[in-house]
Length: 289
Image (tube, rainbow, N blue to C red; front, top):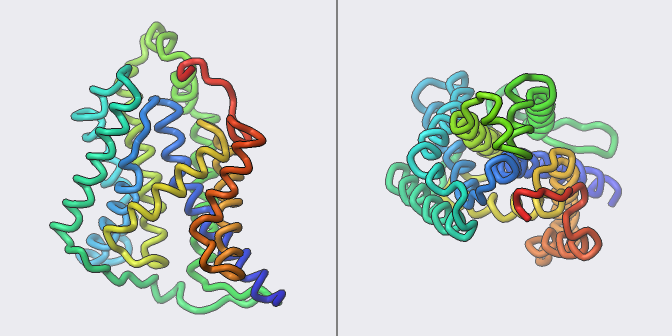
């Protein structure tokens, strides 16, 4: 019993960190641009398919370029489509990005088909790690450290680099940033591309754990919204805490009550929203109120 509990908790941490990566990209886009990007899950799936295709063509080293490819696609989408939604009714952004999600999923089905694609981890990461009562695959350990490293790099980027400070300032007062002579449209394009790239990184890491299929988008977007709601809009620490909580709750529910696993994260969100309507680390954002 103890072994199963410890192993499922470890698996929950891995799942939680994947949710954190997806949710942080969504939170950045929402918090800094003010756009509810319902297509975020589609970029997650696109990252997995880009990794699959690059692996088929050039092997494992090429997989590292998948998030870059998806990030560039995201920037093109922002320039062509998303930029027209700034300052408009939030409902319009929901409708447009929902349609974009359907379009990307249809393109995925057209290019790669509707069937799932097997995508095994590298041979180096095959096998099991056993530490006392803990039993976990090597690839899940790799995913755990890879997501932690990505999140630390993102936090350092937002906290210590000039561009990161511009992003945080623009999220609070975009007019002030423009008055300082900074090209705000270019900054927002970069923000949207960064959010898509983070979703793609999560998709690349999740590909060997989940079947690479068009349904990946739907399986990712709802947990991402739940994590953002629990953690608080635009909160980096909130997304981390909420993502880990959702992952562990879902894994433990799968272990003891599989039929209730799908509703466990919504029950957790319901409880948090009752106690903290702005989320665990949510603040008041004047631009959205």
